[in-house]
Each structure stands twice: as structure tokens, then as C-alpha cells.
Length: 276
Image (tube, rainbow, N blue to C red; front, side, top):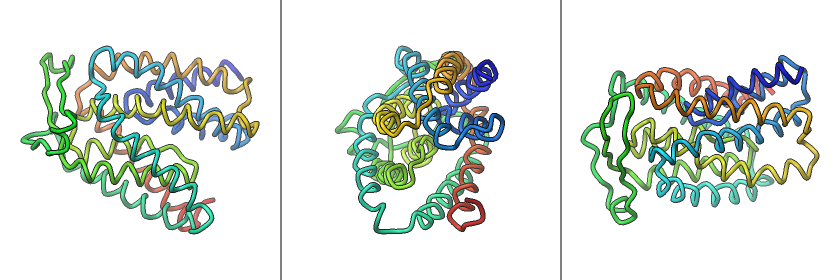
């Protein structure tokens, strides 16, 4: 079984690295549905997969200057504050409401991405005053286009607000927020999709490392499961980082929209009690 988990994890690492979602979206359902692993242990292994994805992909993305570290660290402030708020709200409100609200937000984002159609890069994006002050704009070399791409950052407040909401969801519901991270940067702040994906990978490592200690303390991380997951995801993420840089943003978006829609529908169904 360890060899099969390893192969599934390699696939998860590739998908997570390219889309900026971590490997959990593949690892958790694969472990529970294909291998009959207890959901608690599957989630614990999923947290490990997030750290492994970030470790494998973030290094390559930072080296090639695709990751916008300034944007990542700025948005981590919102995520952290949101996570603390979510933990505080846990006993005060029904998680079902948030499931529906954020499920609908993800559906809106999927439609917004769909409307971009064949647009490879954001066009005529103004530089937000806060982005100018914090120097959030950047430049990277796009290997698919064979050119240097300079970009601006817009709607900083909107992106910060979405990331705060993502933190609340993570803290209250105990779920990852990779889809929110990419969506906040791509749809609201209008960063190039490759930069959004790479920066999301960088951010998830910070979030995942903070969560892993809690899951380990609870006994929800089984080394026999987590070890092949971590190794497979690390291999897949390293390969995925190279694959992503050769892909066009329009192709990545075609991968991302169905995944985003799936996550949105799952959240809405859970919020309305259709699935548990």
C-alpha cells in the first residue's frame, strides 16, 4: 500500500505545485476512498503534503523569482489574524453559514476566471497606492512566453480582505485555503496566474508548518502513511514546478477552474447539510 500511496502522492504534488493548492485536495480523498484510511489520519497526512508541496515547489519558484515574497508575507498577516478570529468564533457561530458563503465566493471566482478566457496576462492593471508604498509590484521571466513580464498589483484591500476571510475559514473549519490564496491574488489583486500560484505555494508552507504541530500533538499523523505521502508529494512538487514554468497561464487556468468549482460545490453541499 505504501508504494500505491507514493504514486498517488506524486500526482498530488504535481497538481498542487502547478495550481498552488497544496497536495491535500488529492491526498485526502485518495487516502479515504481508495485506501480506507481514517479521515483524521488522512487530514494529518494532508497537512504534511502541504508542507512537502511548498518545500518542493517554493524553492524553485523563489530561485526563478516567480514568487512574490513581499505579497506573500503581506497576505500572511491577514491569514494569521483571520485564523485567530476563526478559532475564537468557533463556539459562537455555525460553520455551515461560512461553508455556504465561501462556497459561493469560490463559484464567483471561478466565473471571473472563466471570463478571462484566453487572456494570458492581466492588461492595464493600475498600481495601487498601498502596493506602490510596499513595493509589491514585480518582474519575472516567463519560460513559456520567452520574455520578461512586469506586473502591477491592484485592489490591495480586496485581496487582504479575502485572505482574512480565508484565515477565518481555516481557523473555524480546519480546512486548507490554497484556492482562496490563488483566487485573492488572481481575481482581486490581478497578479499573473503563475505568480499567484507560486506565491500561494510559498504561503502554504508557513501555514502548514504552524498547523502540523497541533495535528502531531493530537496523534493524527501516522508516520506509516505520512512518510510515503511526504516523499511522493515532494517528488511531484519538484517536477510540477518545472512543468508549470513551461505552461501558459491560459492552460493553468483551464486546470484550475474545474478544481475551484469542485471545492465550491463541496463547501456549499456541506453547508446545506446535503453531505457530511
